[in-house]
Each structure stands twice: as structure tokens, then as C-alpha cells.
Amino acid sequence: MNKKPNRIHIIGSVGSGKTTLAKALSETFTIPFFEIDNIVWKRYPSGDIRRTEQERDDYLQEIIQSERWIIEGVHNEAWVADSFRKADLIIFLDPTYSIRTYRIIKRFVWQKLGLEQANYKPTLRIFFKMFKWNKYFEEVGKPNFYKEFGAYQDKVCVATKKRCIKKHFE
Image 1 (spheres, rainbow, N blue to C red):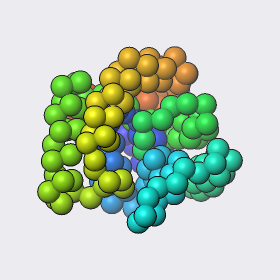
Image 2 (image 1 turned 135 degrees about the vertical axis):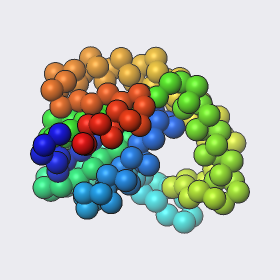
Image 3 (image 1 turned 60 degrees about the vertical axis):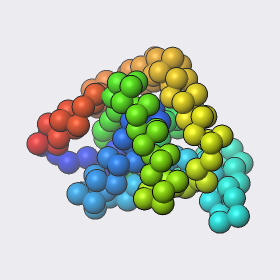
Image 4 (image 1 turned 45 degrees about the horizontal axis):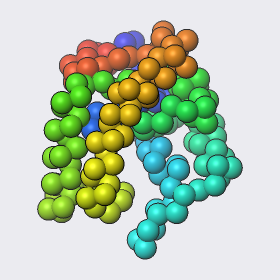
């Protein structure tokens, strides 16, 4: 890739590596990154509060109006469509279902041991929901992404392995 992108949207299921990649690209290119979950939720030590749809949409618009950003998350509903449209590059992380399952388990254990930070309290309830979300993404989210955002295929990089991403930025 000759021109380094200034606006990157990373999508994938739970455990696909979105946050890890976003942090690495953010450091490499000195571009701020934003987690969609933190656009949806206001984070407080006492607990999370969901933003209203208007607050969420306004916050996302504020981010994507800037010149440089990396947005990562599982969401591909209509409210995030502008971020796909305005992105220079869309990275679809698609490791195998079993790899994502392994990562969900590993993440939970590491969070419970205090070896990995979380934006949420790592409870058993959330842990089991991650498996549900992973399956839902496989069955609904992934097909929806291709259906709704296939028009952007010229700027979509589908990565099933880390080397796919490295090759894209060489």
C-alpha cells in the first residue's frame, strides 16, 4: 500500500483482534483510535450508562468529521454507515470461529487475574454473552456486513491471519 490511510474502520467479531490491531496502528501511524463500545456507552467507575441514540450518533459524527481516526467495533448497523463510507480503509478481521472462542476464554481469564484491563466488569454473565455475540456475528453480523457494505470492496481488506494485515501495510 503506497498511501497510508488516515481514516480506518476495523470490524470483526468478539475476539477477532480489533482492539489489539487498532492500538498497534494507532501507535504506528499516530492516529487516535476509538472503540465503538465507548461511543455507545459512557464509562464510569460506578457502572456504564448507555448514551441516547442522538448522543451516540453525534459523538460518532464528531469523530468521523476529523481528518484522522481509527474506529473499531463489531457494529455494522445503519448508525455506523457513515464511518464505513468515510473510511480510507476498512479492515474486516475474520479469524476462525475456534480462534475467537479461544481468545474469549483467554481474555476472561486474564481479566479476572488482573493481567488485562477491561472497559467493563468481567462477570460470568458477560463471559457467556461473548459466546452468544460471537455466534450472532458469525450468523448475522458477517453476512450483513457483506450485504450492506460490499459496495466498498475497493477499500476492504479481509484478514483471516495477522500476515494479511502486515502484507497490506508493506
